Amino acid sequence: MYTGMLHTHTLMVMLFLLIYLIKTILLFFSSTDKLAGFSKKIKVPEMIISTLFLATGIYLAYNTGNVGSWLYVKILVVLASIPLAVVAFKKGNKVLALISLVLLIYAYGISETKSPTFKMASMVSDYEGVASEQVGEKIFSEQCSHCHGMDGRGVLSGAKDLTASELSLDDKITIINNGKNAMIPYSKILSADQIEAVGNYVHAMAE
Image (spheres, rainbow, N blue to C red):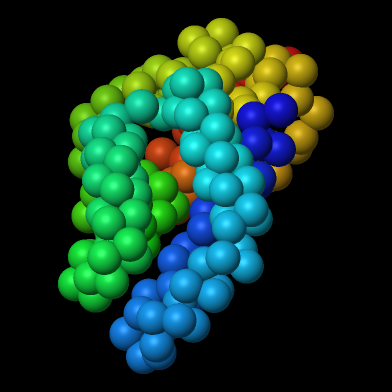
């Protein structure tokens, strides 16, 4: 369910951005009549896309376990951009239209990176000095359990039941490295040894 909502939300966001990009281009480089004509033609599709965009976004926000400052910043940015866009296109204000478009693109970037600065900070040093046999458990507890649950039977953000997983250890390490669906990639956040440690810890849950 969560994964389906995530893909639907991503599609709606892309269509939403495309519509606002076209409107902004028309506002800057065409006549007001062409902008008005385009807006009239896509009025119903735009309403459907906007509704699905907001509905799926609310569902994902409510059901995510990956809550942080990035999520609140994203929500505030989106809530600020929409009324700006409405005023901009109604009044023909190019500056407000451009600001709104930039804010929407910024919000999309935050969503993709889970960071207001588009940069996922390294956590390698956070686990230096931790006993080797405890590294995997500590990383899982601090970075993974908010979605997967401490026992691996997660219910948030589309997390899978790790205790029932039939994936190989190599497959699990690949997913930890590269991410999957709502799960971020950890290849630039943790060291190879740390990823292997949490992979082993996760793999043991299914044994």
